[in-house]
Image 1 (cartoon, one colour):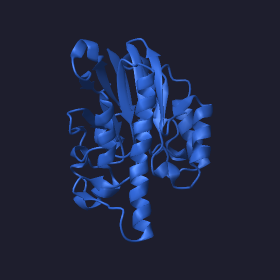
Image 2: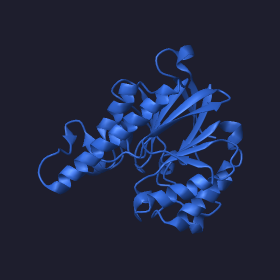
Image 3: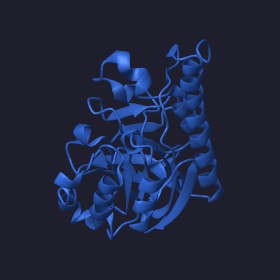
Image 4: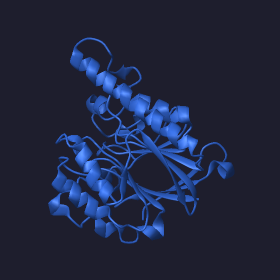
Length: 255
């Protein structure tokens, strides 16, 4: 069994320095890895990124992250990524990594994602250049996730988790105004998860959404935005598929 902790949307800044860290003091007792589902900062500044770096530095478990829309706000995602990497946080965008953990080999496929909407209610590649740009960015974000999932598969993991900021399904957006769902998620991300036959997808972004959902093929999806969890992180116990049948067995708990 692989114990995966996950949280997103912590939105840290100098005034919150040390506050989230306090909830991580015993994470090594509960989990083998920590996944961060984006929106780690408020405005994507270097100052905020350094707060995030200090919050997750030198934890007893590996930390893997994707950035969110807030982390891009200042148009300095590369600098934010470098600051986090220097603290030992592995930031993924269109990349996959396989970690050898006590419970098995965990593949993490990371991509921020982007908006687009959901089947029958999504933006189309037609009309003004701005609409085409929005649609093409959404489609490209799903291609990046598919690329990351393929990289994970090449490493022969026991369990694979898709890590995004934007939602791959609309189940976990319930509670948010339906008018903004196209800006919160993208059905093509869910199709990439299904196509790769991943075991779990985690995302953030939807602060007023719902924790639990599934893809079209029944893969578990979890919204780990901190306002949804109301905890420092959630832990998902994943049993590798060779012992659990199709897809990993999943049990969830709060620390």
